[in-house]
Every structure is written in structure tokens, then in C-alpha cells.
Image (cartoon, rainbow, N blue to C red; front, top):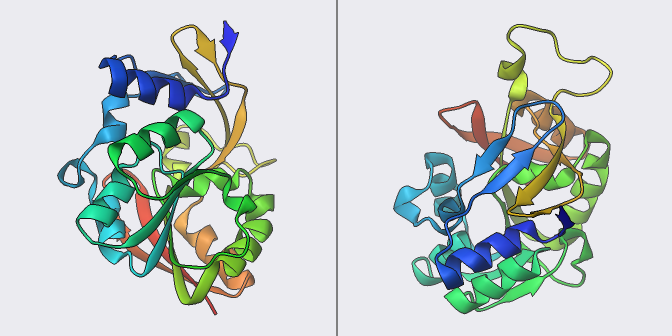
Length: 233
């Protein structure tokens, strides 16, 4: 199988340019394979889950959309809310399509590479906590976020509490149960494994307080997911 680090970009481009409906497969050593339906990345506001709609409704000022994918959230904020938005993703293919779809400011960039820019809202959706990777990285995340936010700024981030997956067994106590490892595959290509963090609301509130951020759970979803708003103090 070919190694391809830009699985999302390849799939997004094929769907947009060729109407190819092939889905992305998610592999984890701990769980059965899952799929990401490619058309889900192109959904309209009315087709988004309530947690995402609430997050978009709460966006204000200059917005940074982290992990923008095909640009669906950015397009809504730009075209329907008339907000100034910068959309970033580490996938070159995703950024190419987001730009073609009409997102005005797109950059192929990692969140931690942003310097000398300030935003009123940092938007992190579709398990936005995932890019943090591991709990030990929360220190870097909060420190960098503080440098990127304007005074009075906010982070809107969703995540899930995965404890429900361990109803019949206790999670491994040697590591936090929300620290997962994934790789993606699409047709004959696959990515390397990468770290992905799901964090329960109680722990997020605790960690935010340790880093002098206020954390409020704004809305809970239908499947152990939630939307949090984080404000530096």
C-alpha cells in the first residue's frame, strides 16, 4: 500500500473534482475500523450537528478555523455571518479545495506555526481537541493559544468523553483513555499513525484552570460529545 500523508486532501479533491464517493477509512489498534463519509466534509450548516451549529453561532470578530478541511465551516462564517476568517489545515489538498470553493484566506499551516497574528475566535471542530495529540501537550496548546488570541478572545472546541467505550472493562490505567492512535487509508494509500486526543469535559475544565483559562461547557451533543468555550484570564 502506498504511503500518502495527505489522505484527507486526496479524498477531498477526488470528491470535489471527480464526484468520487470513496470514503476514508480510520484504523486504530484499539478499535474496529471506522469510516469518514467524504460527503460529510462538504455539509451545509443545516446538516451539521447541533454542537457545530452552536459553535458557528458563537464565533465573533476575526476567526481562525483550525483544521478547516474542505472549508465548510469557514464558508458559512464568511458568506452567511460576514466574518473575517482565516482557514488553516496541514493538508495541501484540503486547502486547495477550500480555496476553490471560495474561502478567501486559506493557508497550508500547522496551528503551532502561527506567529505575529491575533484572533478573536479560534475555532476547532470535528473533535477539535484531537490536534493536541496527548495530555502532555496541553501546556504547549494553552501557551500558544494565549499568544494567538486578542484580549477577550475565545477558543470554541468540541470533544467527546470516550469512557462509554469501556462499559464492559476498565480502561488502561497506564495512560489516559482518550489518548488514541490512528492511521487513515483511502483506496491504495495510507497515512502513518498519529496521536489524537479526546478529552472529557471535567478534565478539560481542570486543565484549563491550571493554565489560567476559564472553561465553560456550552452544549452537549447526542453521543457523549460537547462544545467548550475557553477564555484566557
